[in-house]
Length: 262
Image 1: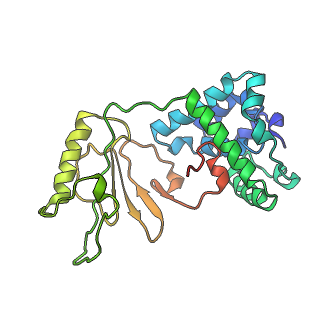
Image 2 (image 1 turned 90 degrees about the horizontal axis):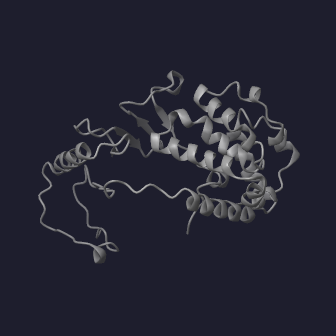
Image 3 (image 1 turned 45 degrees about the vertical axis):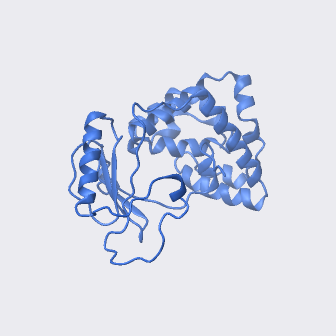
């Protein structure tokens, strides 16, 4: 099946939010190349579990696609349309299981030597999308703090060798209760500038006592490459395991709208 053949009934297994997002813009989605659309459907299927900012980004992207005239649509997706997709991939149920299509397309691009062409198409599209929908400027500059060394008794390795020339290095800090002091300071900042899913606390072992101002917090287990999410106001699917999600390697096609940058 090709995108032009899509009908509302094809999306009967989608969640109500995802189904409405598709049906409302079905005519626009039917114009997209098959090398692109399953990737977008994969994002749409997951929209119920996205953070509000991610969901808005996806909705804005779809609105932008819907706003394109036929001529503009051909211009925007010409490079994707030139990517050849095998008949076996076209016959897949890429509407209900777009992830399977995306994975197999990655292999197809590799074996048919179209990987560079697809990546070029992704970069061109992403540049146009970012120009059409500039990112929102945060109300306060972003701050990221990494605390390293829990459980470490001795280290002879010279840390931050490349970063030191660009910052300030303090050698006589007292680490006692340092993590709690940082969490308290960031909690005050989060309370002053509240934002849905705007303040994150990630730990590698177990969560340290922290303020409720952090509206997204989870433990990252590096050995299993999985994060256990505990969002205060997230609506979770009971089948999703109380918000647990595993991460896996993404094929290059998952970067169709967010390409790699060197």
